[in-house]
Image (cartoon, rainbow, N blue to C red; front, side, top):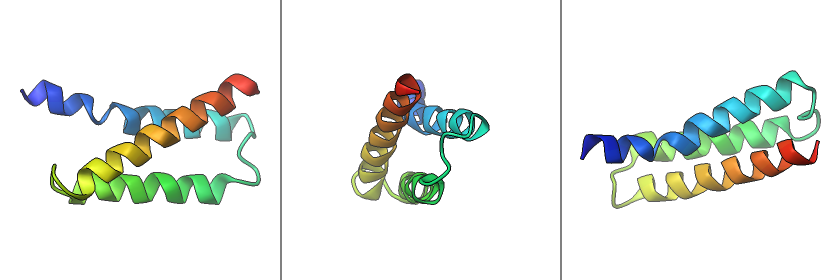
Length: 76
């Protein structure tokens, strides 16, 4: 059961990795502040929320960010 809940942190890891890759390639010039803010807000919601409250919102935000960054990575 613990492994199942650890899988929900996967979007956070993917988002952080893609933010790092896109920053290293100079693809986040204008939108870096907003994307990092999005990441930190979602991370705080996941870390501080309980599974029935903010945590789910944080998971949705991280998943959306990971998808957005993956599309951005594929288009560059």
